[in-house]
Amino acid sequence: MPRAVTVADMDERSAVEATDVPATVRSLADDLYALGLPRGGVVLMHSSLRALGWVVGGAEAVVEAVLATLGPDGTLVVPSFSTARTDPARWQHPPVPQAWWQLIRDEMPAYDPRVSSTRQMGAIANCVLRWPGTLRSAHPHLSFAANGPRAREVVEPHPLAFGVGDGSPLARLYDLDAHVLLLGVGHANNTSLHLSEHRASWPGRRTYTEGAAVLVDGRREWVTFEDLLTDDEDFPAIGAAYEAAGGEVTVGRVGAGEARLMRQRPLVDFGVGEIERVRAGSAR
Image 1: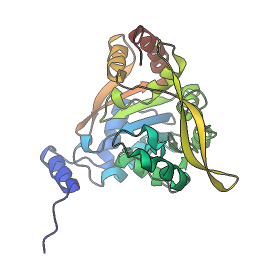
Image 2: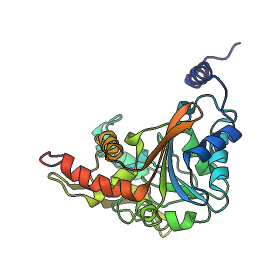
Image 3: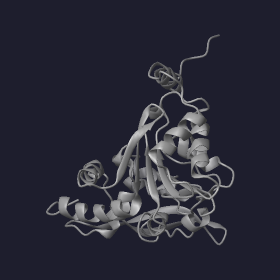
């Protein structure tokens, strides 16, 4: 009996049809080198495998190419968010009945960085998460995974409150003057702008109480903590404004996709001012 055609099959077919020459580890590494990926640097990567066209070896080949370009002294960082573990009272995609909320809080497995699944992070980030030597931070919703000699410095510690704020791996990447690599994605995926949000002030800025199942002294507990109500709707416009203002962003082709490389620190600094300007007078 023939196997049913899956969504993954259709994605593969689309990638084949859209690709003139398949990308390989070698060609991707050449593209990344030409883009300026810094050897020995610390790089936060956001990525889409589909956007790169058909790649020989898929996500594994992309990760191998990035790590090879960074070299043994480089450190690769990716988001490994587990947003399906947030408080169900705030779920919208999809929402669940209120009658389920307490059951979910009582029965959600405790976050474990070794096994807890991600949500909508993509094949490349998930491949980094499985890569030998990768370390993952302790935040139950907003973890980051890092591979390389500075991995532990990036991911530890990661406090519960304000998970992408000044105590988070994003802030340590800022301190390390890391680069951001947008591989086949745009500024809508540029998580570093959440650090800008935490550092900015605007009318309507507010916090809320979040919850998560975590291990406390080896025992599962549902705990609550404070977080900032973030909004990435204006990130594409902020990124475009940064580029238009002369922000140093290198744009080039990697495989069949478009990539952007930039230093994180000036981007975050620009983002603070732009968020305060754009959101002035609006309640978010």
